[in-house]
Amino acid sequence: GVLWLIALLILTASGIQFICNHDLWWLTAFIGVILSQVLIILFWHDAKFGTIPNIIIILVVMGAFADWNFTREVKDEISNIFSKNVKTENLILTDDMLTNLPFPVPKWLRNSGAVEKETIHSVRLRQKGLMRMKPEQEKWYVANAEQYFTVDDPAFIWKVKVDMMPLIFFTGRDFFADGKGMMLIKALSLINVVNSADKKIDQGTLQRYLGEIVWFPTAAVSPYIKWELIDSLSAKATMTYKGTTGSAIFYFDIEGDFVKFSALRYMGSADEAELKEWIIAVKKYEVFNGIKVPSKMEATWKLESGDFTWYKLEIYDVEYKNLICMNKCLTHLKNEAEVKAMRICLIINVRPSVSSIYE
Image (tube, rainbow, N blue to C red; front, side, top):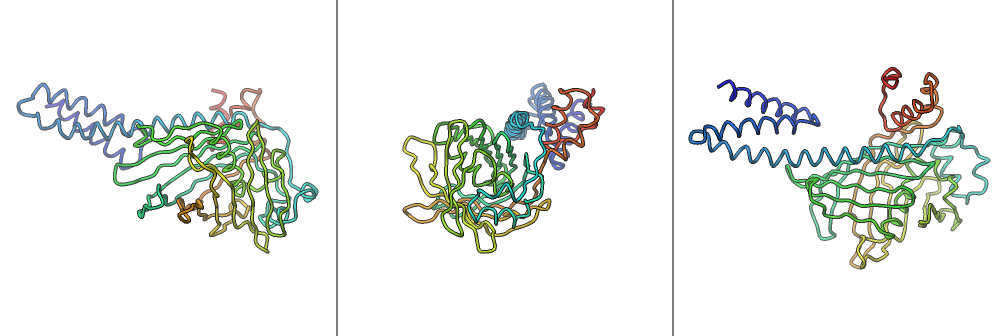
């Protein structure tokens, strides 16, 4: 009787953890299910039907464990890209640095509020949105994503979870670092639906990085991006990094706001994937940390059958890290290893005390 009571309490605790969104609720549930099933086997004649809910719980636990493990792997990748993005020079974006850029670009940078501010070295943002998988799909799925960027050593990681129906979801991760890209989609965080890494993905993820610098505009003056004037309201940007090159056109309005991004990008990663025009259109602007950036955007493929708008996103939280901010936090540390550890923690939005770093 005591063991049955303990199993009940453990499973109840896991339910409370689930309601409170605790990351490890699945571990508590797993322990409770194992104890419960052992008791069911011992008293099989009276308790055998308890196996049915236990099977249901264990299936859900497997999905939750896979999601937790996927998130842990992404966090390791985030730490890795930020560990490479360490600079010691504080640089202010000045008008003198804009003289060689085609006319619409400096106007955009001034209008965004990025000029006379320190250049951004890393970014963390959160977004929510609606997503479709195919042009003929009428239903939109709810998506929630986090994205991390580094600028000095250009890289990004985009992690998304898309809810299709209760307890049915898929997770995805786009990755770009060292000039290489990867695309991963997992059903229930368990089954690989897409797991691609090739030259087409390299170029596509680089072009995605290029288009998304509009969320951290000071990256427009980075040495790996070259600009060419098209007309008074548009400019072509070409990004080259570690053997991978991609181009796109940035469009602006007469006030200097960025309004659209267009690139010829491979749709998919298979051998038959073809270059299609990929459009990002701005629907709304907001100011985050003193920088005016697009907050609502739509991503569209231009296909022979018509426009396929597959993602409608809204940015609702943006955090920038620059060297002045970080260096103020580093003055009390004693050696290079401690400085590097604290710098990574600050960049990925973990704020330990100095004493915990020492420990």
